[in-house]
Length: 332
Figure (cartoon, rainbow, N blue to C red):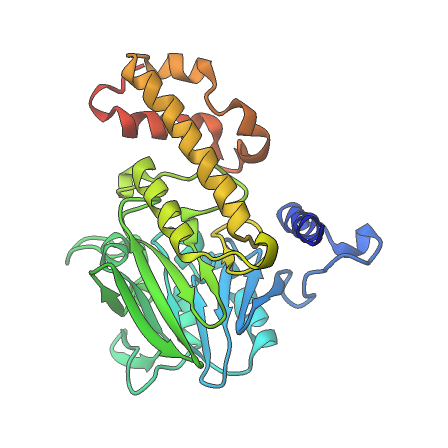
């Protein structure tokens, strides 16, 4: 019963965020956005909070040493994210961890990073002719590759938004504000630079766009994404998550978009993606074309939950999965 009440409350809150509805219009009892920012802040668990409505979910670890952020939202919401952050802690941003390279997750890097302060001289970035102290920005090296460009070429993001500390292996770890922070790379999932961030004492995982409660998995094939990598990432996430008493609570999951979740929510999402992948693999094996697969509607019973996300429809998802499963023969 408790879980159902929490899910209903969270669903109402995120629906209000998506629709831009003020809580006062609902009788004043629902959670409301901060008047100063228009965004929502919510405690997740332990030292971890989430800022909602800034383009993507922005996960925040607070403590005496300063703040650690997972993603920074979109560029146009950077000031609002900063204002929301100041409501959580007066201390500076020390580290920003980017889960991947998409603008709705890294767009605030430049402004939010400039508001921070490095530890022991780290995070000093070149700005014009001089230097300025900035928060350290951490990401997998493939994320930096997608955000930067070779010398003489135009980069898709400003240089001050680029990661200043990268890693190339399966994970990176450090200890901050009294807890271990583990960054886990998931190759070729949503993109080729995806990372999940595990706050171990708080028992919270920020997933980036590997997991979402409001859309089918967004597969950016141009940046190395694949349905196989998404499923690998969801299964890897399940290996890290532990349910609480009577399967309620336990490890809390902050998706790239949508509501805070637990293991049961993740299992349902993973199973949905697996079922659709298996259906489509069978269709591909039988030689069906993309048009025939679309007409068969392999996502039909899930479209009410996931098929109408802005910018990512069930039709787009089916096409991305089809081309990933049959890349050499993906004609209509």
